Length: 80
Image (cartoon, rainbow, N blue to C red):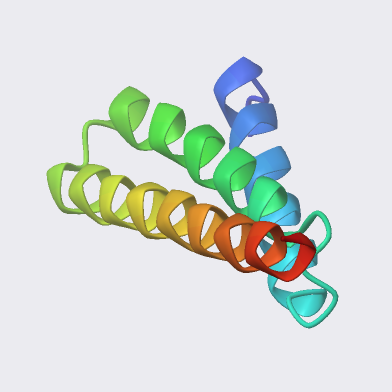
């Protein structure tokens, strides 16, 4: 098996999402890890040319960004 940069990116993405999901209750860095993982896996899915996986990762990234925005809105409202 040949290891190339895209395999490394995919591994980083998988680890980021796994850690992000396992720490979702703390939420401090969870959404950032989910977004990083989603971007890494998006790059890998484009590399392998899997259209379904490309769309899936796009939706995952958008939903993670939405979660990050909502979490920050609640944090800002709590301060004010």
